[in-house]
Structure formats: structure tokens, C-alpha cells
Length: 115
Length: 114
Image (cartoon, rainbow over all chains, first blue to last red; front, side, top):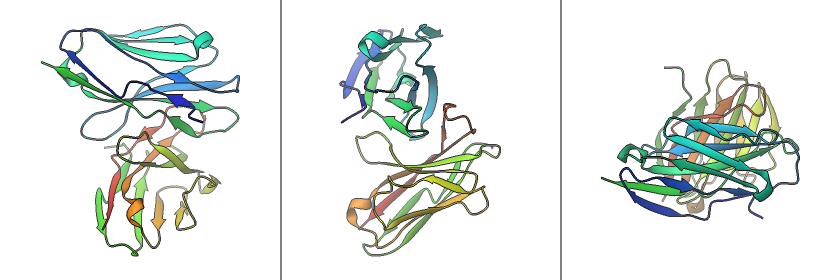
């Protein structure tokens, strides 16, 4: 079974629009971590954020914000006032205490920001 | 530059040949991970090391795949008797010993098996 589901395969938005990337995870572990990574066209994965299962506080970093809701097993990512440089594939990932260090990645959401 | 580096960046080989990829992690990171990424998919975990010890290898795709980290620094991933289905991007990442620290990824080695 897929532990991390990113239902949106591709999204296109016009520059300056807001966009939300969805991530739904599945785990039986009570201690786990959630991550978002960005993979630009150059190919190298770039770490964006980590959240642990005990901290549901939402976070904002500049134009980026994350909404973690354990009740719905979701960890959504919003980009406000999107820019062309935000065009990339975004991956959500899960790491569980029970399975140690393995990262389970979703299939990614390809975001295109149109100028 | 102190990021994760991988060599080569691209490898084209004929089916049946052996290939070896190298990963140099961030110098103070004692954990090193290998992933495979195919087109349109997220990275898929293969194996990881803590220092020179390989702590998980059950996710290696077949017995044709092996990895080493002999001195706890750089690591190699070898694929023997390559098949066309092995064509993918092979990613290396490193992190500190805390399991939940973020993993820093290298640029990857793109393998094409003809």
C-alpha cells in the first residue's frame, strides 16, 4: 500500500496565484516525520521542511506555508503568490520510527507556473 | 562545495555489463542512503549505511545490486548484469545520525541500459 499519496499529478497556475499541493499519508506508527522536497528541472532534491507527529502547529516561511492535520492524515503545502521559479516537482515524504530511516516518497506533483 | 556529490552523472551501458556508481556524502554526515528514481515516480529507498555498517539492505531490488561503504566515507553502488529495467536515476543522500534529520541529496547518476 502506498504510504504517501499525492493525488495531484500536474498543476498549472498563472504567476501570482496561490496554489496548494496535497499530501495524504498512512502510518500506524505514533512517532513519525513528514517532509517536503522540491525537485527543480536540474534534478537535485532540495529539502523544504520537516514536521514531527507531535507538532501540529502550522508553519509559514516566506511565501511557503504548511498545514499539518493528523485528523485527516494530511500535510498540505501552499505557495502564495507563485513565481516562475517555483516550477518544479514537489515530493512529500514520510519517515517512521518503527521502520527507522527509510523515507517513503509520494509520486510527486509537477507544478508549472505560467508567466 | 560541501554538498553530496555523485559520480558519474550519466552512464550509458549495454545490457549485461556491470556498472558502479560512487557517492561522497557531506563530510560530517555518518548516514548515507541510496535511492532509485524512475520517470514520474518518487525516489524509492534501496539501502543505507551508518558509518561503514549497512543497516538495511532488504530493499535492494535484486541480488544483482550491492552497495559498500568500506571506510565509512564514500559509498559505491554496483549493479551486475544490467538489464534495461535498471535504467533510472540513482540518488544518494546523507544525514546526521538522528534518523529524523533531513536527508541531503546529491545530483544523482542517470543510468541508461541499451
